Image (tube, rainbow over all chains, first blue to last red; front, side, top):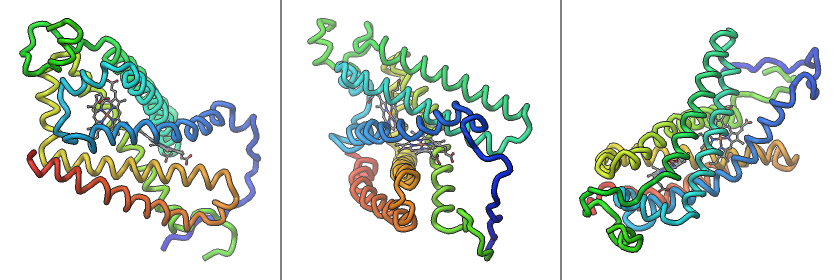
Length: 153
Length: 124
Ligand code: HEM
Ligand code: HEM
């Protein structure tokens, strides 16, 4: 079994200046977002995997039915933003642990930040520009009830 | 073993650190792909249904089960980390709390797996 290194008194004690506020807020954010994400993600998984036919029920018409309600639009939007920021922040902490060379570290941080922004923008556009009844689609694939209600069919 | 105080002695806490890190990274990459495949609803209903159809196959069914397992572990271990950082009671009982996390994991997977695997393999 490996023996852990002894803990010695740090030469420079951590304080607000040495740690930096960004690090402190990142730490707090990780915890606050985690607690909220439990509710958001477990509900998401429960509805999509446990109710009805579970994973078999998921198709375009199912998504149309969910996003007809503003609640689920905002639910997914909040989940998208919190999970991406939490995940990126966590990945940043891991990169800081392993990538010692400044160039490698900075390149990875940039890649993480760019993918975070791209995914959040894409996901947000998808939620809020969603068209439940695109013209010219086989009615088999549509949520017929919803499209009738919307006068689109 | 050295008698000096040290946080990581390679026991429960350190294993859970590894579990937390691995599951966090796995969920992160899943989420990138998940938003991309969901964005197909903006391409066409055909495109979305085609790709989502793959998720109903046995192979993906098992991957989904693994993903849910990862989420459950990461989430409840996350709560354990928060509690241990916050309350000395939890810090004192942190090793026991590791087993509480695994207990919750077993109960939740026992509730989830039969139903999910029924959907995936039941062919309904
Ligand atoms: C379900 C609710 C979640 C909870 C309660 C939660 C909780 C936490 C907490 C408390 C930490 C900080 C650990 C520490 O400071 O040592 C953390 C780290 C992390 N989380 Fe989450 N999280 C959740 C969901 C997610 C999701 C959805 C992702 C991915 C998109 C994710 C990815 C990560 C990563 C990569 C880390 C860094 C791990 C490390 O530094 O070793 N988490 N999580
Ligand atoms: C196997 C498990 C999962 C399935 C079957 C699933 C299914 C779906 C479906 C059908 C949608 C479309 C809209 C809706 O139903 O709300 C969706 C959207 C979404 N899911 Fe999941 N999901 C799963 C796991 C997760 C997890 C673990 C996360 C978080 C880390 C997540 C985050 C999201 C987000 C953020 C959206 C909105 C995407 C967008 O903005 O375009 N999902 N998911």
